[in-house]
Image (cartoon, rainbow, N blue to C red; front, side, top):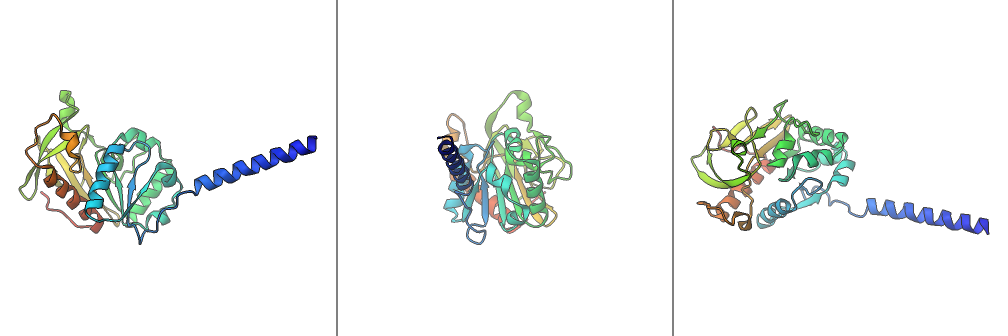
Length: 252
C-alpha cells in the first residue's frame, strides 16, 4: 500500500513538472526575420497603450510579436539582438522595471548597444533613462523628470508639441517625462523642454517620446484637441519607422 502511494505521488510530481515545463515553453516567439519588432506587454505596460501601438503597427503593416516580462526575463541578449526594434509603451515605469530582472535589463541594454533599436513611449522613455527602478540607462546617466504640468497638478492633457520641421501637433500627455539632457531634440513642449528626442547608444538607435501620438480617439474625450487623431497617428507611425530604420528625424 505504501509502495503504491509512493508511486502515485511520484507520478503526480512528474506530471506537475512536465506541466510547468510545458507552460514555460507554451508560447514561442516567431523568428526575428518574420516579426522584426518586439512590443513589450508585460508587467507595468498599459494594456490600453499596448493596444494603441498594435493599432499603429497593424495599420502600417509592420510585423511584430508581443513579449511579456517572464519571456523577456528568459531571453539572452544574443536572441534579442536578432530583432530590429523593441518598443516599450506607456504604463507604470516603476512596476515595469521591477517586473524585470537586473539580468534582463542588462541584456536589453547590451542588445541595444550591439545594434537592436529601441522606441520608448512615456513609461518606456522613463525606463530607458537612468531610472532607479532597474532602468536601462541608454542615456549615459541622464535621469528624466516629469513634464512641468505635473508640478501644477495636471495629470493628463492635450499638449501642443512643436517639431523641428515647424509642425505643431496637439498630443495626448499623461504623467510623461521631459527629456532634458539627452539626445537630439525632435519636438518640444510649450515650456521649451524636450518632448521627443533621438540618439544612438552604441550601435543601436533610440527614439524616446514623453507624449502619446498613438493615443486612440477614446482617450481624447472631454479634451480639446486641434490636431485630428489621424494626424497624430501618422506621426506615431513616423516615429516607429524612424526607430526601426535608424533614421534621424528633423531636430533642433
